[in-house]
Amino acid sequence: MARVALKDLEIGSVLSNDVLDQSGRILLKAGSTIEEKHFKIFKTWGIRTVEIHGQETSETLVLTEDQLGEGLQHAESLLKLNQESHELIQMLRGLIQRRYARKLAEAERS
Image 1 (cartoon, helix red, strand yellow):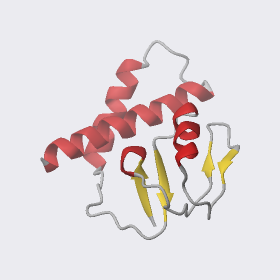
Image 2 (image 1 turned 180 degrees about the horizontal axis):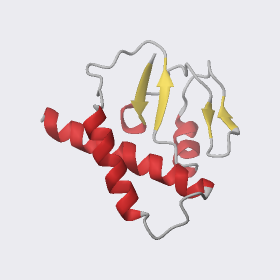
Image 3 (image 1 turned 135 degrees about the horizontal axis):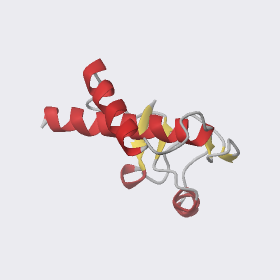
Image 4 (image 1 turned 180 degrees about the vertical axis):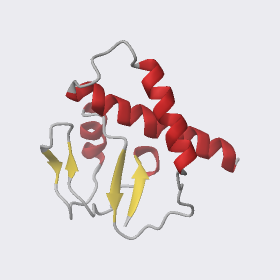
């Protein structure tokens, strides 16, 4: 099983997990074979990666505690004027943290 970006996804690949929208609704079930029409569905719903059978990733990006800590500081600086306890702000903080940490890890790997 491998997580694959849409740009690298091939027609005929088989999903290893359900593809869900942001509210948890199933867009495409595990075991489905990717067809051309699915790309439009994924793009419409903002799906950037899917998990498929039979492909191994060549490298796995591992985030360190330091990278995650810097990511959290970055997220908090961007969201400091928002209501911290709001559910959407908490979700956004986590997304910003992980994205920033990934950028740091990719920069260190290069």
